[in-house]
Amino acid sequence: MKSLKTYSIPFTGLKLGKHFFDYVIKDEFFDEMDYSIVKKADLQCKVELDKQETMLILNFHIYGTITMTCDKCLAEYPHPVDVHEQQIAKFAEEEIDEDEEIITLNKNDHEINIAGLIYEYINVAAPFIAVCNDEGNTPYCDKEMIERLNQLSAKGGDDDKTDPRWDVLKNI
Image 1 (cartoon, rainbow, N blue to C red):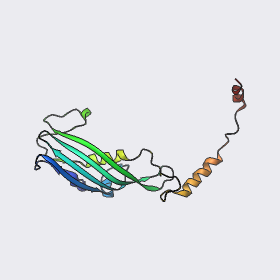
Image 2 (cartoon, rainbow, N blue to C red):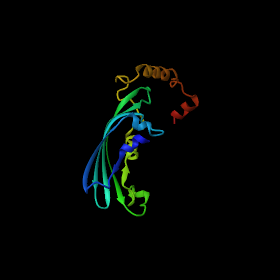
Image 3 (tube, rainbow, N blue to C red):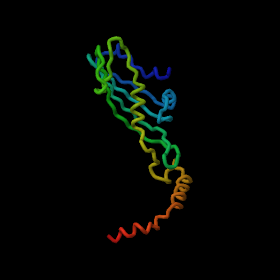
Image 4 (tube, helix red, strand yellow):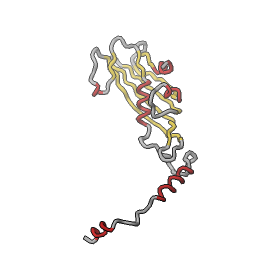
C-alpha cells in the first residue's frame, strides 16, 4: 500500500486554478489491488486538477496499453486504452448522496488519493470479452489453439439429421 501513497495529491497548499500531475502506471500498481482484472500495464496518466473555492475538478487522461488474455485462444495481447474522465470533489461539512457521484471532502482533509479512481477507470476500459483482433493472423494469437478449437467444433456436427417428427411440421 505504500506505493499507492504516490497517488495522493495534497491540495491545501495549492493556489486556486489549474495544476497538472503526471503518473506512470505499471504492473506494480495492480499488484497492490486485490482481484484486479488487469495485471500488466504500460500506461500514462495525466491529471488536471482545477482548484476552486468550493470544489476540486479532476480531469483524467489515461492512455497506453494493458495486457489482456484472449478469451478464445488464451494468448496474452496488448489492448490499447484511451480514457478521458472527470471527477468532482466538493468541500462540504456533511456527506452528499452517493447518487450524485461527487466525492465529499471535509475541512480536515488536506489531500485526495486518486489511486482508486485510476484503478476504476482502467478496469472499466478493459473489454468485457477480450479477443485478439484478427483471429489467427496477429503475432499474439495462438494459432495452434485456434486450429484445435476448429477441429473440436467440426467433429460434433450432426446437423444434417433431423427428427422425423419435426419434418411433419415443415409441410404445414
